[in-house]
Amino acid sequence: MKKQWALVWILSGLSMLGAFSIDAYLPSFGDIGRSLGVDREHVQQTLSVYLFTFAFMMLFYGTLSDTFGRRRVILWAVAGYVAGSVGAMCAPSFHWLLGFRALQGLSAGAGSVVGRAVIRDLFPGQMGQKVMSYVTMVFSLAPAVAPVVGGWLQVWYGWRAVFAFLALASLAMGIAAWKLLPESLAVEDRAPLHLGSMIRSYVRVACHGDFLLQSLGIGLGFAGFSLYISTGSDFVMHVLHLPETAFAWLFIPIIVGMSAGSALSARLAMKFPPTRLIWIAYGVMAAAMVVNLLYAHLLTPSIPWAVLPGMVYMFGLALGSPAMTLRTMDLFPEARGLAASLQGFVQMLLFALMSAVVAPFVLGDIRKLAVSVAAGWTLSVVCWWLGTRKGLVRHAV
Image 1 (cartoon, rainbow, N blue to C red):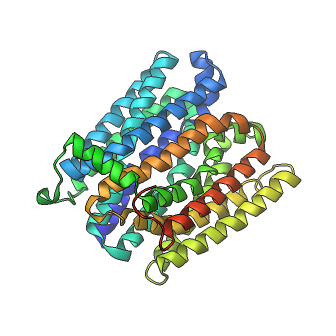
Image 2 (image 1 turned 90 degrees about the horizontal axis):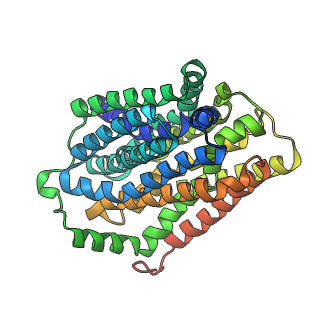
Image 3 (image 1 turned 180 degrees about the vertical axis):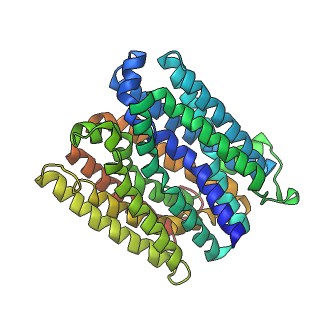
């Protein structure tokens, strides 16, 4: 049991790097713009480029871990993340910052992608769902802690201190992984790396109807709500009219919902069939979505009412996500690393598109944010239902 919890903490910490890279520097958007002489839209690009490179690299982490082993890929990725964080801290201009944010994005996804494969390697069946729920529960602390830490670092020392913190935190996680993370994929089970076969494998998985639809279902459930995160600086400071040290009002309710949902998912993993748990989760998300729409259109946004529907929505999302994630990966039991990569790519690509394309149109408007959540939920339900129907054409779309 101690080894299981050690693994949970290590994988959660590695996954947190991605969330910290997004949330910790949101309170610094204004200071970055003033320091580097760019406007708010340009600063938003530092988030978008991070998300796009994060999504791109997710295509490769699973395959690389299937070839070289889980542990080695994670350690090299953490080293790259430390370098990117140090570079961002020292960036002399906006374009240098943009480049080092791209390096952070290329490096930050290994923990979440390879971590899923590690869990599936070591914990079969519903035990894997239970461990995945614990990892999600611990990981969910990151979006609550990151903006609070980032806000106070911004007030005390300025935006460069935020990236110094990310460098030190990632270095600590790398040392912990080096000392404690086991290799879960035996040498004889590894797949040789051939570019042609890798491309064919990606095409085979990506063209699998159920896999694509289920991955879209998982990603779209979060994509609409992700606008609250990608526009978090604007939402907190211009919609709710709070200072940069008050980001906890947005993120702590979200994390409370995620933690509670993950904890309940772990408790129910052995008691409820995964399919039933998933549809219960969708029902919870629907109730929160309706309340959010009504509030946004009928009342003036204020604390705490503006963020409570989001807490319930994230509770539902976290309740169903572990079962949804593992069901999708199990479509390809012989290539879970590759499946985890593509699954993560779809989710992060949707997040990146929301940040780059949709976010500029919803800045400052809580009603548009609420409609975006509703649209994401609706598309998610449709995709998941189609992807899990009996008799659907399963191999080509």
